[in-house]
Length: 228
Image (tube, rainbow, N blue to C red; front, side):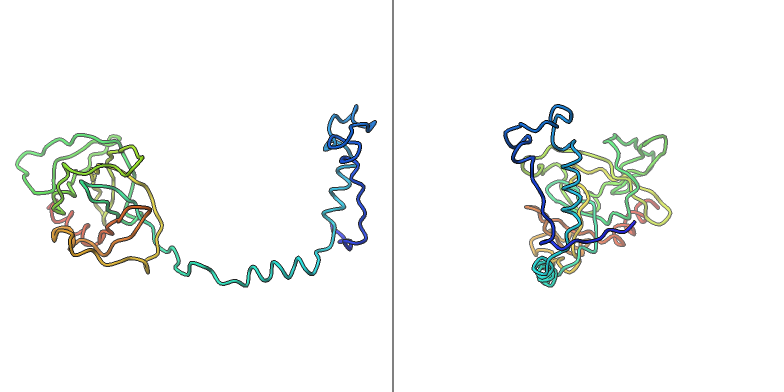
């Protein structure tokens, strides 16, 4: 089926709905049958004729000028991460590491294991995961901190997989997935504690938060080393 465009000046539309229809004095004899003008074949025919109008030169020029404008933000959002909080610190890891997010659960201690960072094992959906404390590994006091303004706190277990091993990471709060431009990542502030700063590849700004971008390779290596 082909549609023939009609020059705009060749189309004359009688907008009877504005004179005698629902938007007018409502004296049209067809209203008793159709109730509303949008149900009338005259209204439908006028709409079809309106859609068959040719596009004017001015309209084309206006949109061509619009799409010729350079993009305001030239930084591509080429990375994504999951943002969470431990203590006072908002941190992130690449989304590709995550398997699932689970409700908070108390770990069961393992006998004869006192490794710093390994708090025990947790059962999530019938599967056992080693529960690892990022607070201990990164030197963060997890007894401090509060949620962002006007937000509820969502303590969760983040289930991640590094190489062939899965881990459960307890976090105090979960912000969610964010996309960011790697070109916009800034260097960590000098005031960040040294235990944490060596695991950061940079800092990104999300709303009113400064979020530390954790180095996934270093975190994965440290988790695997702790579990040995």
